[in-house]
Image 1 (cartoon, rainbow, N blue to C red):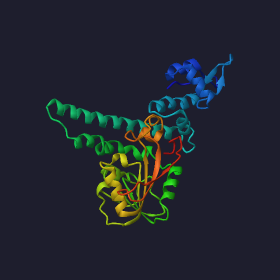
Image 2: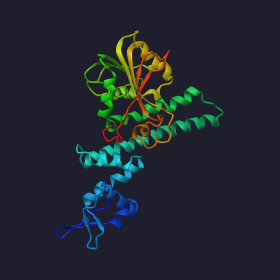
Image 3: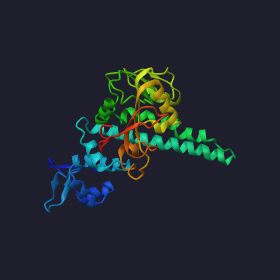
Image 4: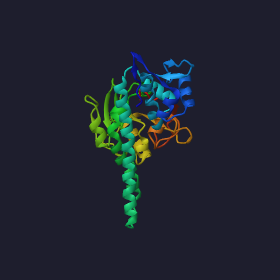
Length: 307
């Protein structure tokens, strides 16, 4: 990181050209950041050019890192302006995101290497094996960073909990770490990944090791069953939805419509879950085996700063 010296009790500033060169961006990009209020230089030179203090540089250095992680500028502004964090906390958050990206890539590379070695020996992996290494095993590999990098988005949670209606007993299928479990209801969680079960916080709802396609509960055991952004991890989503309908009188599913592939790479929720796509919807379910569920499309925040 570039440093700004103190000379004679007065802080020296870096010129816009110097900062652009050190940060690996163009001067025009810095002008744009200034214009939208993302990184505003705190001083001007005698000739009127932008000049950056040490504090300005500290803020700016996070922007290229988040951009390389795929964040949009509006999302980055929310992250660097987060009043609940200081510089150290922001660095730790950024480190967690980078580690998650690294672990995801490493897990996929390992899986591909294994298949290449098998093919070199004339061994063809089965469809189940091909899906497994990019499904549950990959989830185990990348899930360890979830508590540090993912939090409940309150606006989304409010709509999910509203869709649960008057249900007092709730089954959360594919629960993960339990981010969207309603705190005022009797919740039972189901999660197949041992890694994710171990990461559930103290005081979280009891969690059963099981898969959505084979829920170990009697018919109508719960008032409602919910599944939040998890269908893309299931081996047989239809079977899982039917199981949810079997064990609960009401089903609420937060999922995605895969019909629109264009914007999913720009939107934080679908971009961060690479196997999901399209617009978000809450499925307020009836009987999935006989008739379609009621679809309620949900407007989501454009930023994931609190997600």
